[in-house]
Length: 61
Image 1 (cartoon, rainbow, N blue to C red):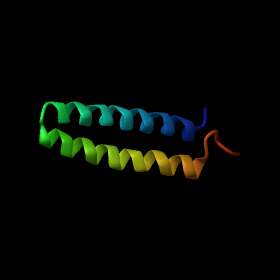
Image 2 (cartoon, rainbow, N blue to C red):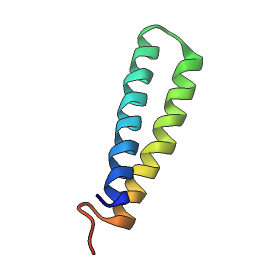
Image 3 (spheres, rainbow, N blue to C red):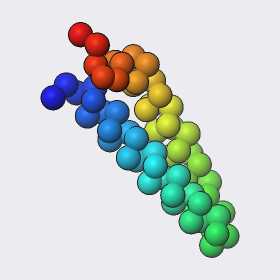
Image 4 (cartoon, one colour):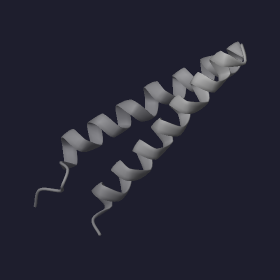
């Protein structure tokens, strides 16, 4: 299995879990959790988008 697909899957899972954590932190009014959650969504979301753009999905040989 090419590493590009594995990276996309891992980055996507981290982004989705961070988004869920951010929403949960908003409900609980945990603003430090919201701050770190948004930062994680921004960074790993960017990694996900750029990995898909650079490697393609499915991977183009």
